[in-house]
Length: 361
Image (cartoon, rainbow, N blue to C red; front, top):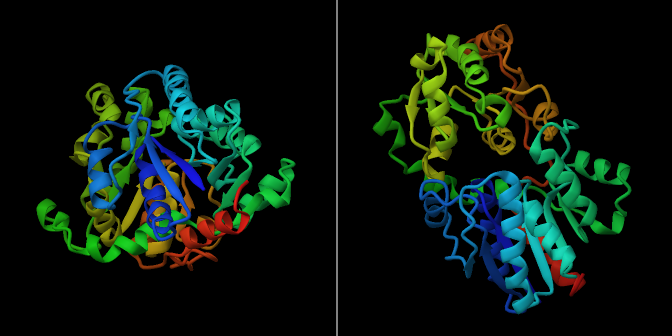
């Protein structure tokens, strides 16, 4: 079976790593890795390939920085030429970024079966670009691989036939568990002068939080209360740097800003934090697997299992709710949660087994 695996952004790389490693164990699978170039900065792309032992892409489309619309169109045009030449038996996409939807549309338009890894997740917030990407990709996918039971329920509600849906677990957790020991050797805590459980970590990248300097200032002000007690380490996405310069709120001055961190360094940072504040979906899952308190700076989540079973809580950007949650964490009253079903480091094995058992889509 000839498979074209398409990735383009930092979260994609974390998800594809265990799938590629598992596929490499099966001679009957021939995999071609295609990088769209959506994330091209060395800190956002190259470092992840090195840290996660991902082979160099067979093809790099090199789309680079553009508007979302332009990126989608450019990926489709360039990918269509590649798929037209190679004619794989299956296109496999992961996650919910621009590259995911662009590759999915291209596969279907060129008559190639499509598999979507991490299907069925829904925030029910159509203002999130990722939500649109998820809904549209699932609607046209021939195979939907899910991470949690709610995803299966969402797909059933949307009319996706059960025969297309396979609950295999969470490949992000495969990567987390597979590289946890290597991450523990990271010197990042010493580099930043941090003691375990004596700091918090913050990540922001959602357009609603970072694309407007006033909104960004409000977010930083809301989390600044935690910085009065412990250092708050903020690896800053390249897009956010320029907004920070325009943010007038003094909250930004209380944070410790660092460049984007390689995967292993960031896992070590998360694992040792007193809490993690984020607007990222994947980090909600990783903190649940690590047993680290997570405050999600959104009012919705497409990963509800991290709230019902894990260590995550939705606080939005309400300063009072964040402060109250932090008080619980400081007092040791935060629930430890439990590991969701099939988050056992073997999701990629189950996913590949489905492909082998089917022989073709």
